Length: 83
Image (cartoon, rainbow, N blue to C red; front, side, top):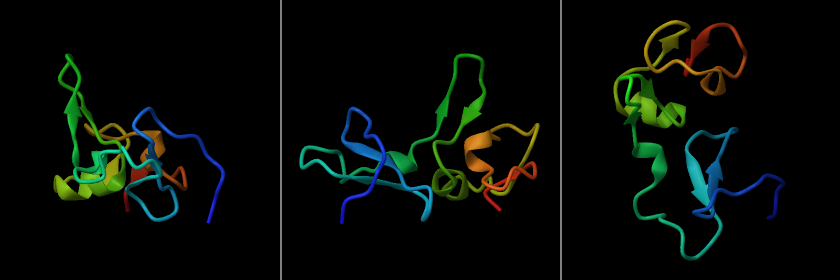
């Protein structure tokens, strides 16, 4: 079933309702989902693309001000992400 929303260059996008990522193109990297990746910027800050990645890293829930917190992870805007 089709749904609205843009795709990243890899043919995937974040699934805001269910968490994680899913892909639509046959050439996407579905064997190794991006949800499992955690990156650090050159400044050493932690970034989680979604709550699945934060949970897999043992970092959820994340409070505003803690490393890894991002407003994209805080659906209800209460300052606690991935609760």
